[in-house]
Amino acid sequence: MDKFERKYGRFAIRNLSLILIIVYAIGYLIAMSPLAGTIISFISLNPYLILKGQIWRIFTWVLIPPGSFSLLTLITLYFYYSIGTTLEHTWGTFRYNVYIFSGILFTVLGSFISLLFFYIYGRIIGVDGMLYAYQVFMLNPVSTYYISMSIFLAFAATFPNAGVLLFFIIPVKMKWLGILDGVFLLISFITGSIIDKIVIFTSMLNFIIFYVSQRRLIHTSPKFRYQQAKRRKQYQSDIKKEMDPSVPKHKCAICGKNEIDFPDTEFRFCSKCNGNYEYCSDHLFTHKHIE
Image (tube, rainbow, N blue to C red; front, side, top):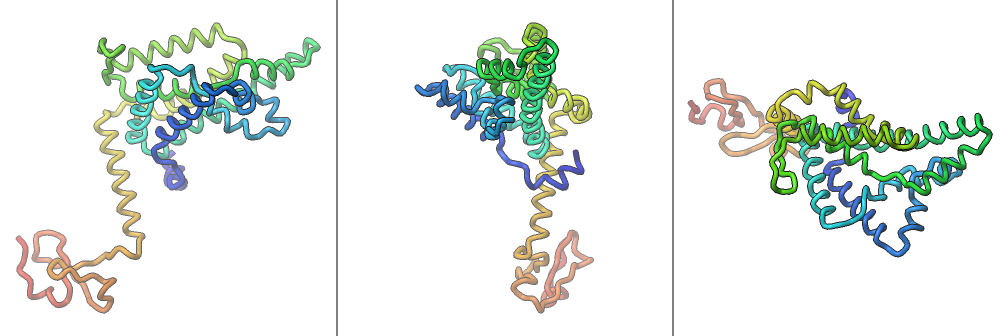
């Protein structure tokens, strides 16, 4: 992951949690519109129609909200924005991007696995399994519910002792809420249909991979992870300044001359000053030493 971040980290999308919340908001507006059924059927994730050329469904299905809109939805969206932003600051923007987009990618792959399963099953029993899968996906459009759930589980695994107020009254640690959600997902997996099982598993696959591969990151203290992310951000900023030709590299501590405005001036560090103080040729031997 470190090698990938060094190579592709510049492509990471900052404030991805805010973008997700905006996408959710658009989805809720669609769900409340008079043409909700028509629009959702046009943008939903359906592997059968994707193979027929409707490629946009690979991306547009994320607009389908994870539930109906209510006052609690606003609180939930703010909560997911808060924990998502915290994860981005803790892990780094690149890792958080990989986590979110891998969950979306795995969900799409899961839909095609479902289609393949029904195709094989249909061939065995002599029915059109792909047509059946098409009907199931149209009647039960896939939403971002399990993607949101994976974000919550990642936060609970990263900050197990963080406290929240359940129903704004009961104090409870995140690890217990994470365990409760894990049990709920397991029950949904066991009692759900074949498509439900595949979608749940593939949607949670990013969390499984994250937990197995990033246990060292999980088990270090939140303070250490925050400081590590802060140092990484500062290092990237320093490198960017070093590469910027408009930023001077040498500056006189007395008069403020730099090599950009005065290219013929020489700059030297003083070995008798206590600290890294640099001076131009006019003040190198005439300045008062700093002790």
